[in-house]
Length: 545
Image (cartoon, rainbow, N blue to C red; front, side, top):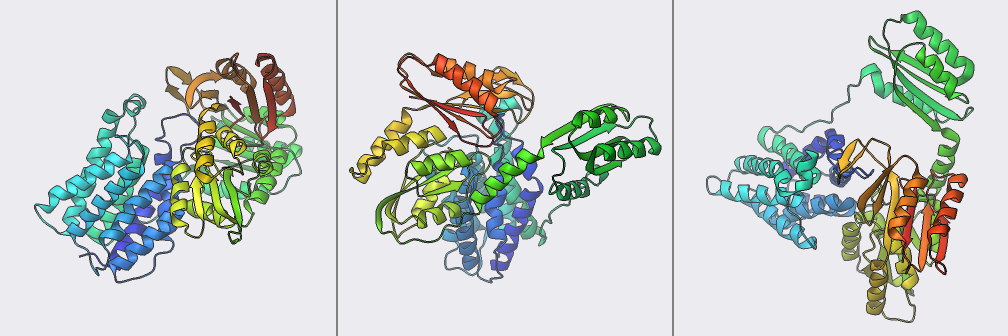
């Protein structure tokens, strides 16, 4: 039988197991845009519970506490689905001190039903398939024995079989040669739980054992990066070849002549160096004296620091509770100083910093809503991976009406805000805002997160890629050229409004080139707007109506 302490330890073990493989799960993301965060979202979701587990004998109270913490900490679609699955345990274990195999299977059954019910168009070959087939395997096991260890062993077997099937159910997974990321994350959690049920052993978090004491290297260079006496942070790795320790010392001495914060380490195969300098070219030339360059990273620390300060100022915004005294208010999700100001100019009371690669939790959204002094709060997620968390937040808030306008991109959110009519009722506004958002064609210019081949297009890591309403259509080397090709697809003779939002990595010269190009491609009479959004990840976001 499983008591509260055992179930709590199992969740901690499952949390540690996915934390150990978080990067692996993230990298299973098949789409080459920088949003491979399934492992991150799932691990943060379950970590929100694992960090707050108290020693309770009752499995009912333990499961209830875990489900509540996970629901509020849920991030991204995968995290929300995970929280729903664990809500099934809270419901199945209600008012019992200990759980057997039947209770475990009943819990999964509730989770499966609610998870499928939450998704508008459930897709097989995802985490939904894995949890469903794991549940069915658990049902089959009950016909033989209700022992919880035996049952959960079979649940894990069913989850593993289902995960292996996902490429056959989703052709896009098969073409990429991977299994579903969410399903993999769930299996890791279930296997971590099994370690406690089966052996009473909590899987421990692994310390990464990287060459050249990489953790220490990163720790030291992070401390260096607080000091900005020189502009460019330059790191490189060279193949050591036949050079001796004397050559390594010469490299260190030469780097110290052109900058500060010098760190040079080596082993039998490579030399790795870090320097802050205004002359990265000289540093790389010196690197070639030690061997063949294997990897180079040069970052403008001054600009990074400016962006970091801006972002920290935004993130440090505290959401203080406000009584719902006004008739209506708005909460939006966005990232980038310019976009935050754009939404506030349109009447948004609170902006939650987040979006691509930074999915806010249900708790984050709830805090922003409860800090909005309105009887009706319109919540705009502005990202498809934030919609479920927004809906969960809306369900949990009872002292005011929360309406989720299911905007999936920043341009949709801006257009929906413009469509709001303060004289209309809630239902009319929801309809008009959703209708206006649906009219927006959105294009995005970003970079490839990995070497990939997708939709017949081949790309290398960091190549510029462009998406037309979510579909990858262009691979380029220059973001302005990518925008030019994307604009040609999006803008037509009937286009009335064209808006381009440029990000933090686009300089004024690039922005000027882009503006001139967009104006030349827009039809006569169309309104063209150019906004400095300062958003990360996306070099350009273009919307056409």
